Length: 172
Image (cartoon, rainbow, N blue to C red; front, side, top):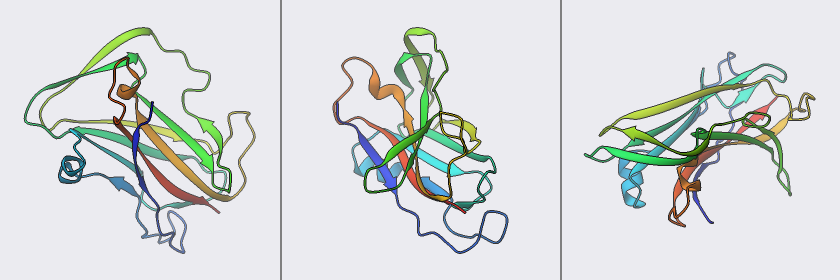
């Protein structure tokens, strides 16, 4: 199944987070932009504390948000109790997934619904310790953080379902 994904490639500044970095800290899709793309939900992904450059080895906290851009209540179905996913890929000619938030986690099985009131935003915040799923600290470099709202994974979801956001960041 193909899914639409909003992607922002950040122009990396010269500072590190906490050291005067004023570069963009993520992507928040407006309802106007989502509407132009024929979507009713607007996703967002931001790094807490701002910036897109981080010191190697320090935890990175980020938040994924989903906003109901309609004037009506929406009931969204999910394939299980998991609502979102975060992944980090090493940026190279052949991207390599190094971390997946759900790796090693269990979620209750069975379709589950989530209600979004008109204009309501749900936000999911997690912290990555810069370790790969195998446990080793990842090296400095450029990475891609992707967040997905998993409502597109339910049976009979539209093939063009927009489900996530991706941003580029750097470890120094």
